[in-house]
Length: 116
Length: 114
Image 1 (cartoon, rainbow over the protein chains, first blue to last red):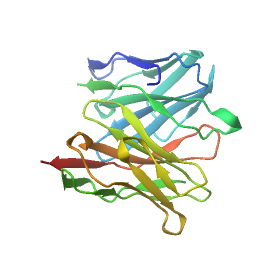
Image 2 (image 1 turned 45 degrees about the vertical axis):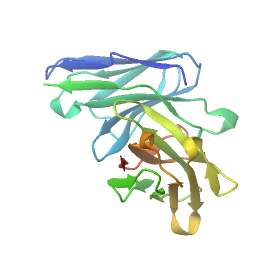
Image 3 (image 1 turned 60 degrees about the vertical axis):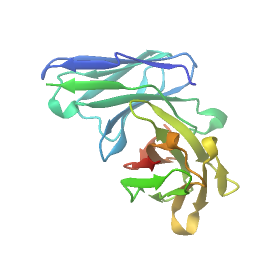
């Protein structure tokens, strides 16, 4: 299994509070991703990173920010949580080997976030 | 923009019977295709992937998938289902652009009857 951990695994918070989710990898992979999973939508990309301090937006980035100050850590922040951000959040990593960015992604165990 | 459709939201199959899950994609260039499985409360596990070459791809747990360019499909099959195959299955297409962004289908939940 890919060495990916997510913390916390479960969180309940109130509307308007800031929340930070952490993804940590031990694989030294270049690419890291944050997805959210909602019934009927599969997984949707929030933000991704292609190196330290290099990040870009995904499909559903509004209301989220990210930071990557070290190769191994990728943080997802909800500046002011809303009920629509109640979801399961998955981190993924990929090596992007061989000069191609299209490489297999491996997923962490997920964080279940509830915003009341 | 790429998109993935999994037409079947739920499928119920008897243990020992065959299983086929449908996946249709829309993408302008050569697609990179993946199937992932998610057991309840777990993360996603890669079953198999297609990048190029042989269009019939073998994966883990006895699964295989066939890429059919003419039909824009990448259907997943298993000849004989086990109770442990009950899970949700996701098809995904990868983007050629930098970032390896994946687009997922909505998933198919498989129930296995004894």
